[in-house]
Image 1 (cartoon, one colour):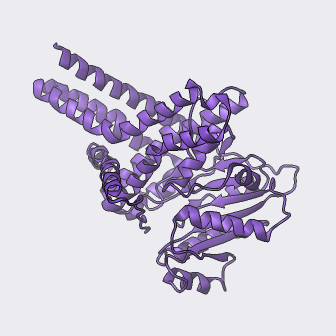
Image 2 (cartoon, rainbow, N blue to C red):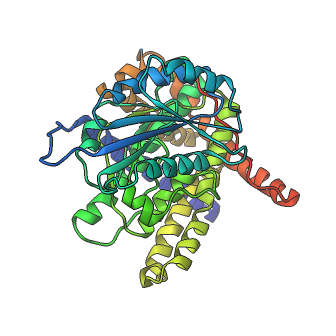
Image 3 (tube, rainbow, N blue to C red):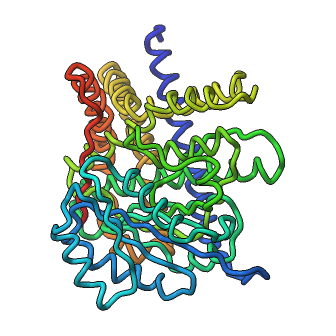
Length: 430
């Protein structure tokens, strides 16, 4: 065995080890979400919850959202707001649909008056409007919840927030809401995105929580997701509103909370949401997510400038940032690298095809099977046939998933040459 083969086998061994470790974490997360918490009313007054749903060109799907969130509006002290934008126009189809439904459903309509700006601008404006209209309200018993129009949160989440007192709450995101309505290749993408939530985000949040419970330094940087997110009003006043300089305001807010060591509580109640319904839409969506991750050092540098705390200037947080960047770069380059190495090894010795089957088993088939067999997710995964076909597609999709990051690299370069800011592309809903 020459040196090149040794390096290649070592890298494949690392890949297989990571796959095994992810499988263990995925299984642990599935067990965790299956242990649904029994709600017990706490001996304290109810909080007031303002749920914000920013919308833009959502006329075709807005009715289903209003009907679903009406279930949450029936709880006391829960107010639902749909926030439209002048970018779409005050007489748009979305606005017209909302005005028509105001007669039948319990929600409020706010209209962001500017033609420039993105989701963060809509949300910040709405938060400021609500706070000014409720001047004098206790900011420690007031929460702002954020959802997307395609969010379908478990209703029990409201009971937890009504009597909660933690600074920030985050629901796990399971990307299976439209699973039965999308093409097989998108189904695979939805399963991979759900896998990442289960073996990546949920363990990171749980570890972050344990660091506060055990009163030790944080060892991970959790990022918040811009749906299923609840923030106490005093935290928004002290830590600041959402960052409008990035397309990933949710990631930035989560990292900002981690840098300031603000506790984030992971909820057992799931937010079921949609995966991009077409492959081009998936590229645009993942490009935007990747953009947010690549901005991490800017978030960190900005926080260091703001704070005089020595911990941000030491090596520890720099290591956490570097560790997160390694994960992000693996997203962009991991699949092409592993696939190329396996191809070279098979060409050199056909028996190495066994490594491909082992990789597919650990990285694709067993995780997909675990997700589809989870009783709590059965309502969304539908019939159980076709696992083998989806697993075969799953061997190719990781390569396709790198299109989003490479789309970011190309567009970021072109926008810099042209002197333009980052481009926002809306993800269609179905």
